[in-house]
Amino acid sequence: MWPSASTKNGDDPTLDESVSMGVLGALDSITPAERVAFVFHCVFIMSYAETAETVGRSPVACRKLATSARRSIASQPTRQQ
Image 1 (cartoon, rainbow, N blue to C red):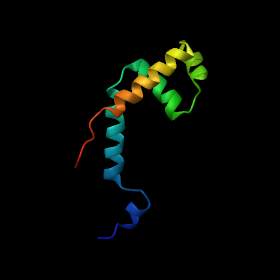
Image 2 (cartoon, rainbow, N blue to C red):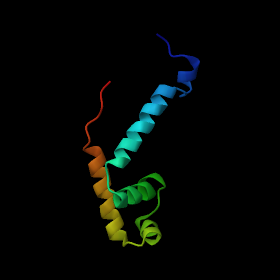
Image 3 (cartoon, helix red, strand yellow):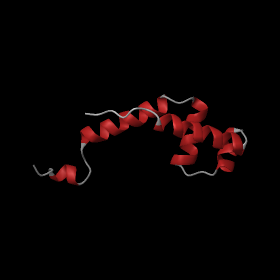
Image 4 (cartoon, helix red, strand yellow):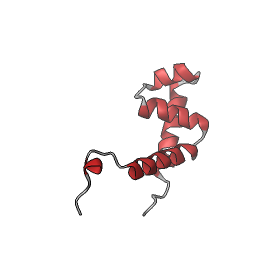
């Protein structure tokens, strides 16, 4: 079966909702401090120094928090449909 025109363009509401729920679940599984470091560094591409300045922690602490968040998210089982 060929995908419809809307899914060819990436406009699949079911997939969009599934991805959104997966991201929210992954972010909910980490601590608030890990979440901030992960989002600032990995999503907004801020350096650890910029992240540290923003959140009031050292760059080393931010690196450790982001690393811990990545490991926690990566270790979560994937959901099969």
